[in-house]
Amino acid sequence: MSTSTPPKLQHVAIETEDGIAIVKYNRPKAGNALNTPTLKDILAGLQWAEQDPNTRIIITTGEGKFYTAGLDLLDPVNQGPDSTISDEFVDVLSQIHKTLINTNKLTIAAVNGPAPGWGTSSLGLHDLVYSTPDAIFFTPFVQWGLCAEGCSSHTFKSIMGRQKASALILAGQRMTPQELDSAGLITKIMGKEEFMESVLDVARGAVKLPPKSLLLNKELMMRGTREELLRVNEVELGVLREQTRGKESKDAIRGFAEAQARKKAQSKAKL
Image (cartoon, rainbow, N blue to C red; front, side, top):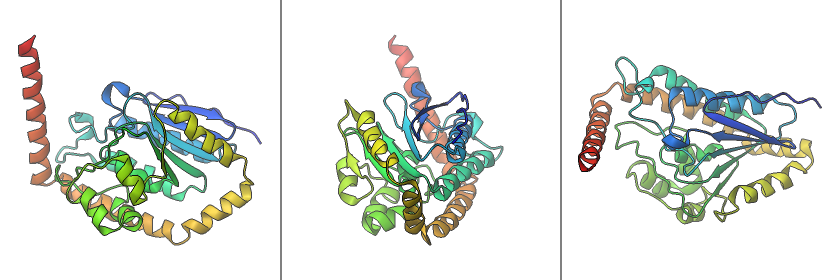
């Protein structure tokens, strides 16, 4: 079976190994925070892995200390003329979700560090989720006047139950890997020193399994669920578009920007 060459991307690095594609978020100086160019690279990487005939397992992870710091709130490239998040950003985010939902390949999230916002909300779209012991998870949607995305309004509730889902989405509580392991969102916590090697060991074992059987069993598990997730994705992102144009979101992000500017000024004054 022929293979294609992974694309060279600015904000995502793609590594391959015997049927395994690693899509690595690669903005370490920004904590792998998400801006529109980064999202486009993530989408390109996932679509390449989905279309590559030799790839059977897709792993997402982050370069450096963070899995991803979530939406880059202060990057003007993310903002629309009358909104805190541009329609283009939301459109690309939607395509990423659809790619993860529709693929019949095994998807693994290798959470190598803190994963606020989308880093947490998107976990329910993966088949397997592994985490280092020191990662942290939270979804500050309400804090920023926004709303749930990554299908988390559905996946969190179906995986963890309403109360845990509410703690993350409504109350914005921070949770440890241990808490989310117990709740069922995380498959297993793995040691930090050999984290990626441990995740790859799982992938190497899975890639040796009969390919048709693996494909058919994923299709069975996703039967009915896939259509529901696609519907939820459309609903969530429709609400998100509305919220980004509202006063709550604009006030929250303006306040955050002002607080960051004060911190920066104070740091300079100490020098």
